[in-house]
Length: 198
Length: 428
Picture (cartoon, rainbow over the protein chains, first blue to last red):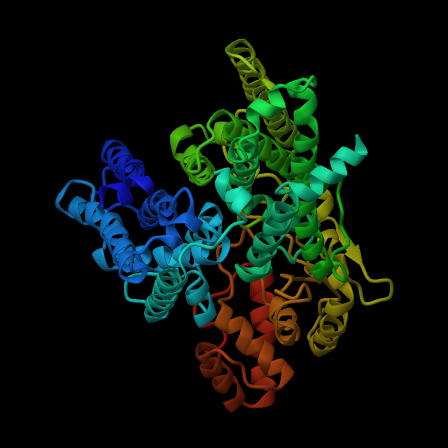
């Protein structure tokens, strides 16, 4: 287990995610008078944590991993579930402090959707490229959210208010698809030469 | 050199970056709010600049991704052993990535331009300055990304840099308040939202921004080719110098771009034959769509004593407050482009021109209300108005004998021109 965590560079990713949240929490506490953190910053904080954890979705040599006599499916499911908790728990902890990264449902929805998206990216494009889509999509959606028509709520689901059903369904779909694709297929295979060079 | 560049264009992240910028930019242009940029070329150029809020961080991330390539493929030591200098080896990558972001940004402009090419006529030189600053911003961003990717070759560099770039753009206005002009120097997206029809970006603002971005690009190049700390410290010089020159060149006016009005764009352009119908130069492409309903409205108004004989576009701007000259025989009409580039609310133009005959000079204290104007206008046209308040007044007019109703409508126009409209003028 410890070897697995080390091979996935989990300590560095955990440190990055927690440091990111702590840094933004400090920034907001110092520079803002409001207790409720702006929605844009909440979404971007979730994105930062998700991207930090993306690197743990693959090891140094995925081909070698595949030959191990593990049951990968439950292990990958547990990995994503743990990643979800790592994203959500620090933000939930801030709800008890002076700079509240909330509401909780929005944090959970965005964390699940973005983790699903990045897992989907890891399964399709490889771990190194998995952050492309979450980053580009979320930047555009948080800066220019649309609430009309329904297609707008679906395309900018990250920044929709807590009550939006369309956003919740989109995030749920992405989460389920990403979870299944990654759990079943694992990170995308690279050419062996490229894998050796990482 | 061109052969190396061609290979680099194919083998680097250049093509992907260009396509991503084009796709994201075009989606934003057409999906967020089309009517923002359909007025004309200046509005398109400024809207593209606004969407740099997304494209600029993406260019940073793309550069950082590409900058990590040598480290990712474990060839840093191998390449260092070749007899070519770092600078020599970096030039094709720098050129390829710069070409990619420029092509992506210009292609996004072409996509927007194709949408408005049929209706946009007025193309001032400042449009190209706005476009050039946008291009320069992306080139500086992608080169800065290359430098960061080379100096900090970690898998997290690219996405983290993208997020940091967005953070800088979002925090600049707050960090520089109340000196808005400082944000205008350093942020290519500042004051580019919701451009007005007669808006422009003053040349001095574009020059100051270009100086800053060019300095940033030079610093990035120095960092990319640097092999040791000496050159890296020296790379600070251009960026400091550029910031100083840009700050000196930018006028110390807050809201410098928002308050800017292009007098040439506001000038009237008229249809050839009588009766005269004129729109502002920026709306010249809509003249053919304005003329038929405007002339039909003048025909409706003709039975009034001393009727209006011309229709001009209402070129009022509220910041700064400037009003078109007032003539009793000219009806003013607000002209706006819709999300398809053509005249917005085409069905309402006839009624708006007729109602415009019951407006008064801008400095009046006693003007006719919108419901009264619409009721009188629709009484002249002979149809029911759409707004409930106007319908009540219109029915009141219709229940009166023809002659009395006409006298009231004529009295409303006379009172409006003389600034003496009283409450309930139409029905009392």
